[in-house]
Length: 219
Image (cartoon, rainbow, N blue to C red):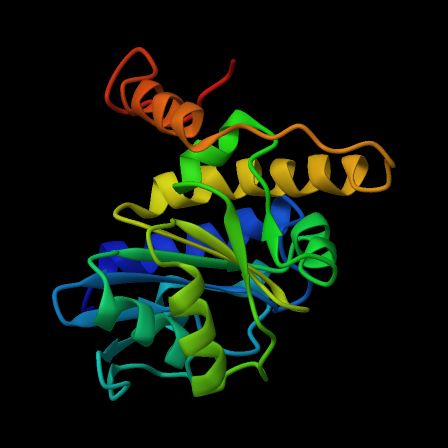
């Protein structure tokens, strides 16, 4: 089976997203790029039943190379990100806090230092119909110099070089969104961190942890 390891990782990632409440039903999608091929979760398959064989492989033009099922409706989004960046993994979630926040703000301000994990304030891409080229273009623009963005009235997308790390970061993004939803109703002006502090934190996080396998900052 072509890209067997990557397809197994995509299937496992989808199951994890379901367990952690970051997707509902068959919503959301996951992909991994290897050279000019992309392993991406299929459309409309219950994640509890998803197997590696269900995960299809397509080229960067969207042509099926080895796929028994139709790909995620967001294949155009994944391909647009891969064609324009060096990212090798993409996770798209429909988690409650990030989806809710995507309906009311244009950017998540740097109120918490975890913002540095994503390169700075997290932008919200303008709404466009799911699966459309317009949505793909909006999200690519929102991801410039960032590893996460919200999709207006839709959900969130996270990108990176390694699927395991991108999956770990989904929880941190959802945490930031929860914090913003809790702080938003307060009438006082929100205190935010400046660019210099975000840069300092980013440098610190780059070497955080006991070994190179640690991807989870704690405090």
